[in-house]
Amino acid sequence: MNEERQPIFNAPWPAVMATLVIVVGYFFQTFLPQDWLLRNYAFSSAALDAGRWPTLFTAIFLHGSWAHALMNAGAALAFGTPVARYFGASLKGALVFLVFYLLCGGLASLGYGLSNPGGTALMVGASGAVAGLVGAAARLMAGQGEPGKYLSPPVISMTVGWIVVNLLLALVGFAPGLGNAGVAWEAHIFGYLAGLVLIDLFGWVARPQSA
Image 1 (tube, rainbow, N blue to C red):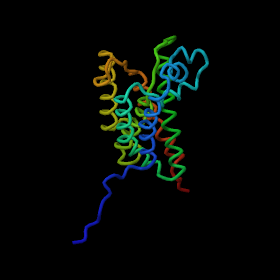
Image 2 (cartoon, one colour):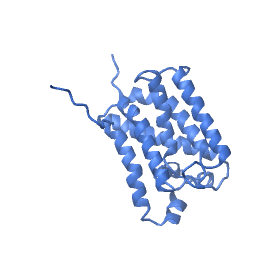
Image 3 (cartoon, one colour):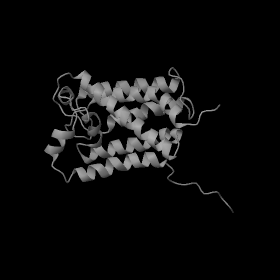
Image 4 (cartoon, rainbow, N blue to C red):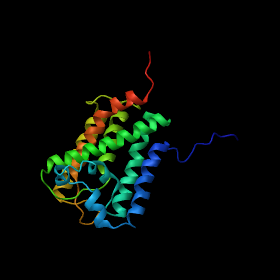
């Protein structure tokens, strides 16, 4: 009997790379002085006030623990897969995916900073960027692979659920499984909204346009 074999693991390579960067990045982070890393590359509102705008992005590549890194890596693979598939697996599609991911993360950090003016609490992690992938994936689920309408049931339900979960995390003050580490819930919401909106523009850039 001749049966067509389906690949067990068929996530697009840009999504896989984003996942590996989180895991491998934290592996190397564990060998470096943590105080030095946080002081120079973590994000805070105070750092932004001091003109250290690169921390909007460098914080994406740092994590507080293996649990933190692995949770973000798993979410990046799950929600990055439909986004990377939509942009395409070409070099152009991968570059668009990378810029989209970083921009969502940067806007998430900025949202966190604006929500906590003058704050000195340090924020690290890819969760803001990953939240952008979640928002984009909501639109793609609504449109069955293309960006669907904002007021479609999948987008509304996922958006409401995302906001409610993050507001609950804000009330609790920490995420289960991450010890006593605080949760930058504001960054999660801003990153999600960024992905929700920007998927149209980045899709237009990544995909060939008909004449």
